[in-house]
Image (cartoon, rainbow, N blue to C red; front, side, top):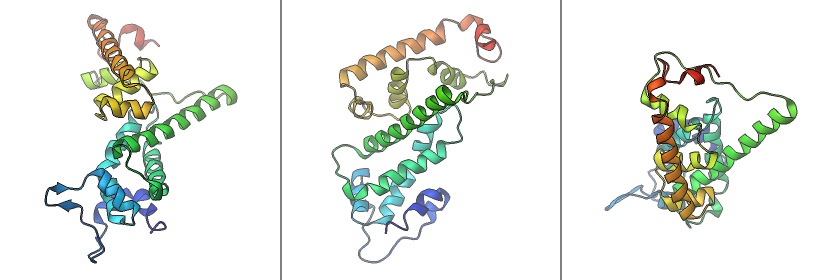
Length: 222
């Protein structure tokens, strides 16, 4: 089983076309009450069901890609890190115990991979003299609210930014965010409030001085 599974990750476009095993040993992905939960699918996978893994991949491939894409200045590694996350789940499947929601488990692994990448990037910049990847300046026709919010979110404190992204984009609960970031729940609540307030102020303060690009005049000259 383990030898065949990486193909699901490395060729994501093939996942929906994986033929299902029609033998009696195949566990269904739906019950009379509806689709199986992520946790039930992960337990099936830990017992040998490759189709359960394919279903989890189908559910979380795009959300996980978005998780990395929103946090990387250079989007190129996002797909690679998405695959790396699923491979980590694959390798640890035999030891899986449903102590938390599967998506909490998933994003905790993803965040660990992201932190490792950031440490390597910081090391290269500090000791090897490599400048961090530079983002191209925004096009003049991209002054929409989505771009403006993304640009402004990058100005927030690192932890506040992660709390805000996990809540607003990944839609994790306070307790899930606390587990992923290893913070007390009350700290998550206060940081989310602070992040939302800071974002509101950053968006509102320069509203009358924005250029056609959606940035302030000072930002355009950075």
